[in-house]
Amino acid sequence: MTTTKQFGPQGWTPERLGSLQGKTYVITGANAGAGFEATRTLLTKGAKIVMMNRNAEKSAAAIETLKQEFGGDARVTFVRLDLAVLDSVRQAAAELLETVPRIDALICNAAIAQVAKQELTVEGFESQLGVNHFGHFLLCGLLFDRIEESRGRIVVVGSNAYKMGLKKIQFEDLNFDQNYTAWNAYAQSKLAQMMFAYELQRRVHAAGKQVQVRVCHPGASRTNLLNDTASLPMKMLWKVISPFIAQSAEKGSWPEVMCATEEGLKPQALYGPTQRVETVGPVGECPLEPLAVNQEAATQLWSLSEQKTCYSWSP
Ligand SMILES: NC(=O)c1ccc[n+]([C@@H]2O[C@H](COP(=O)([O-])OP(=O)(O)OC[C@H]3O[C@@H](n4cnc5c(N)ncnc54)[C@H](OP(=O)(O)O)[C@@H]3O)[C@@H](O)[C@H]2O)c1
Image (tube, rainbow, N blue to C red; front, top):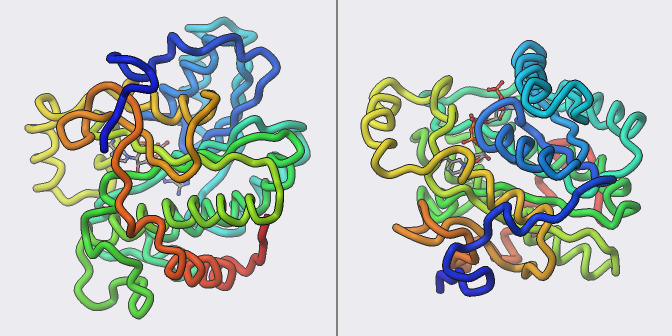
């Protein structure tokens, strides 16, 4: 059942944040959209932010904007990461481990969506599954021990799309070589991210480790998500309807900020906006469909992800 009760009728808002001095948050895809807004909010409370972005120019521009707002000594830096390329993920993780001594939360925010025609990453993964899931799976594995040392969190930014599309991981044709559609492939990638998160929770618990894994979604938010990748009709449709059905990118960022900072959140839960079929409105706990916590599929996905990323790990 959708509920905002835990945080009152307004739901969770950044007003609940206390000082974040001394805390370090690592956010993928933070030069734009919800990741950028999460960075802004966390900076207002004195946190240090490490953005992991694929584009150096956009990152420099984002940092410049933030320094204009928060002053030249705002603690925001950038590590280059292209989640579509596993070598880039390995290099970025190595750079981060050398330069960032603690990670209070890794926010897996970056994504591509609604890729109009089937595209493959250099490793041959369907692009949305490759960027959104396999790239983050490897990154989380490489950074896990540092997050554990920091008693930190992993926040996975999912989507309501997880319960749309085919509602399963299509193990027999992961790349949609047959019958590719932008919706089905995006939905599979977000379901994979969420299944991974709940499986990681189970493994963390079984291993007696401390890392908290939290899962959220931003509802429908006005960001750049469809700009580069979606078909022209999809972009036009979104342009027309988004002013009526979607909220600001800032509000879309609140669930991930909440999951990175708030105490007392439940592990096997999904947090996000709670109104109009969980697209907008007060942030709280949303319904979670059983398909996201299907342990058999999650175990199979974990093994497959280890094989595809050539990285075996468990907490
Ligand atoms: N907006 C919505 O309505 C909505 C709904 C449901 C879920 N979500 C989820 O919310 C999260 C944030 O998305 P958003 O809406 O804020 O979209 P956005 O404005 O497009 O931001 C996505 C970020 O991911 C980065 N990114 C894309 N591919 C990457 C790669 N290969 N390596 C590293 N970074 C990469 C982008 O970098 P560039 O700037 O270089 O492209 C950008 O910084 C995503 O997980 C998305 O699935 C959004």
